[in-house]
Amino acid sequence: MTSRGFKATARTSSEARAVARTQTLIKGENGIGTVRKTTLPGGLRVVTETQPTVRSATFGIWAHVGSRDETPALNGATHYLEHLLFKGTARRSALEISSALDAVGGEMNAFTAKEYTCYYARVLDSDLPLAIDVVCDMLTGSLIRQEDVDVERGAILEEIAMTEDDPGDCVHDLFAHTMFGDNPLGRPVLGTVDTVNALTAERIRRFYKKHYDPTHLVVACAGNIDHNKVVRQVRAAFEKAGALKDPGAQPVAPRGGTRALRTAGRVEVVDRSTEQAHIVLGMPGLARTDERRWALGVLNTALGGGMSSRLFQEVREKRGLAYSVYSYTSGFADCGLFGVYAGCRPSQVHDVLKICRDELDQVAEHGLPDDEIERAIGQLQGSTVLGLEDTGALMNRIGKSELCWGEQMSVDDMLGRIASVTPDDVRSVARDILGRRPSLSVIGPLKDKQAARLHEAVA
Figure 1 (cartoon, rainbow, N blue to C red):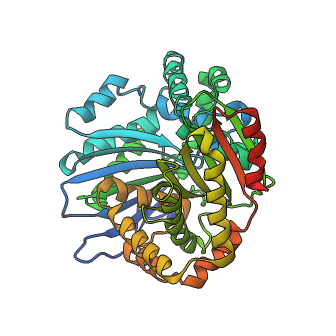
Figure 2 (figure 1 turned 180 degrees about the vertical axis):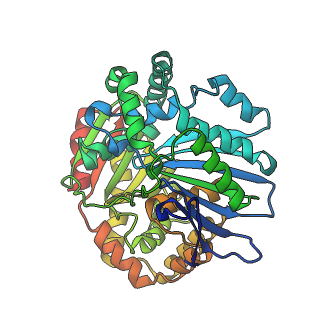
Figure 3 (figure 1 turned 120 degrees about the vertical axis):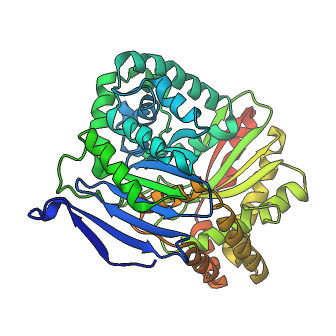
């Protein structure tokens, strides 16, 4: 990370608290890739990355709230609120919000995760002021009317039904429950039919006021943009809404704490009439701040990150037992998951599980050879760069980095961290992670004897 000094501009010379602080976090060559951050009075952070060689810009606002911030009775409230912010403000109706971006060929959307929510719009660089005005208006001026809550409830229930109809997606929610149990990280982001039906406009309004304070927000913008102009436009939008009330307020810090996962060796099976059985075999992983995450990324790539990976070769290429098989990692503020997914015919479940377990045990005990590690490092470096080829990906990177880590890392620094991973680093993290007793989640039409044998896979 490259750091520069603060440039402060006081709104009133007598009140130091009302100072907007601007910092250059990454100095790009000829302005390309320069990342700057301004913290406004009121605790709102604005982070931008300049890419003058493109003709687009992506503007987003990240909220420091996700489904893990919900009580059991509020499960699904974060996602419900995400929908409602598109339903209208004092200045715009729902149709006016969508038509404003459609009229200039822009894209607008949002997503909710377990630890954050993001609202964004991607437009031509010349239309960035419109995108800023619309998205800021949504975040600061949502009406959250009872009639909108009632209408959107139906759409959310359909979204839940759509997810339930996709067992390949649903099995990951099941695995989260298997690992975390009945606590916020183990509950579905969408909520359940019962919790969504029980949510009222008043409860959602209280949730909105609590979690959408400027101190909980990060504004991120990337593309052919000017940092100072973005800051002025964002500040004007928030001040117009009366959102920057306390000039001395400070941004909330990234999440911390410690969370223990449930006991290993758990098995959860959902009997469902599907053509395939959907499997996730996994164990606790690493928190997103753990320095070993770079080595785990290399390990994950080698095990199940592509067509040359061990799991793909053993399960699909050599035996044809599954079409889709891969491994993945999920890092949260204080814990993480490592999982292996496969979709296969129900009659092949035990064969697939045995192969996956054998591969994990083999790598945990003996490690990976140097040539596989070297190939995985190259693959991970390439995918990292290729994944940042559009302004939306750049906005996601700088917004999430500020919200979750409180700092920025250049692409060169990330590539350097990946390249610095040694074979011993990968073997060490393999022993620590893969050497743990796994847990298992399965959705599919398994017979009683098949289901009873699943415990063998985690023994």
